[in-house]
Image 1: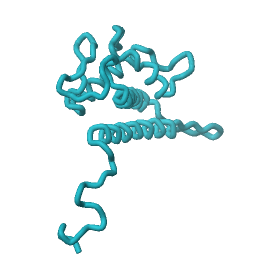
Image 2: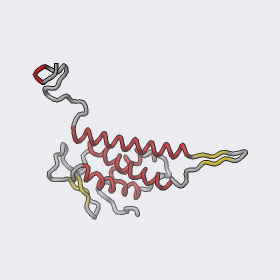
Image 3: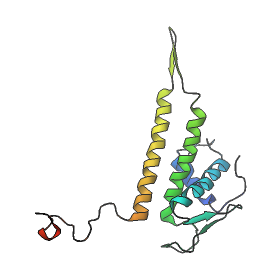
Image 4: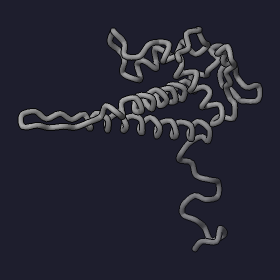
Length: 165
């Protein structure tokens, strides 16, 4: 099932296509499949972001009135948040591709010819794991600020008042 109706996320299709490495015509992924990935990404990120963005049945994305945003709409999705949508959509698309190609991964050999595409399956899985790690890192930094920041009163060297000698 692919979403054929235009959505408010369509402007990110070309960025997603570029991120997936689908840059030569004829394209590997149809626009409808990339659009579906972006819609599913919005739905998947709703819970992680405490409904910062929501999408309705007509595929119209809206901002939460209780969330803080640094930029005014439009676009609905803040530019700083577009990376999370691209990464999540990539994860969804690559997961489907891993599931689809898992039955095609094989290795065989006879006396003259040997064939193996196991390394290709491993590369796709590694690419998927890299996207998952990048999304987790992005969300951690975006939601909780800098990754390296000392707490007030706990700068090295620790002093005696704090209980350390």
